[in-house]
Image (cartoon, rainbow, N blue to C red; front, side, top):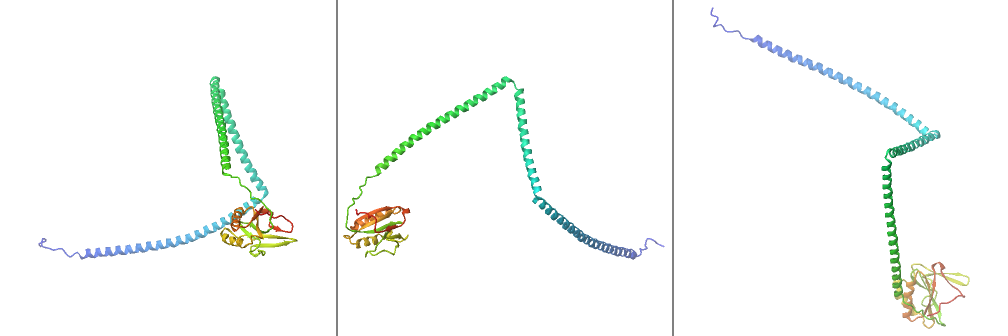
Length: 309
């Protein structure tokens, strides 16, 4: 038999073996994955259960700690309100202050002791030289202070002379700016006074143009035989009412009345304006000064009249 011409049989058994091995490996992997997945789920469930129990335990522990803390706080508050504990706290604070003061004293004593030891150990000649240097420095400082004091005194004297000179200049300027005024002459007259109150920076005629009592800007009150006139603030003739005041003065009979101004100390500029208007109207006038604390003007059967000027 010729063996060189014989062909090998088909290898189907090898293919089948390979396929079986591969399928078995796949099944083995699937089983292992299933087992691992079940173990992981079981461990997660156990871990979750353990975590809940741990949280409950921690919550109970925290609740207990909170109750203990509240009890301790209440106890400490009660002790703090107790006078005995307050005294002890005050004593402890005093003790601490005394300890600090004692420590400072000890430090000072220690420093002084070191300085004394240093001085005692130093050479007397060097010590004398050091003391002489300190004395010379002190003398120099004393001389400097004396010079400063002398300079300050000289400066004060010079400033005083300057102040006297300035005061003399001011007095001279004031004397040059002042002019002697001639007071108007008083004279007797048979005319009746037409009273005008000058107060609150305004002019308040006591009567109207027809010589009737002015009750629109003045409040009148009677006390026995006298009448009191109280001007109403912010009424009367102001600086803008010069024309109206001029018309009132022009309407008065110049041969029967003259103006009698009752001038309060807060309204002298207004009196000067009213006086100029009276002079322009050809009316005579007189005036009496009043202080603000004198109160309202009273008119009675006995009194003095300002003479016309």
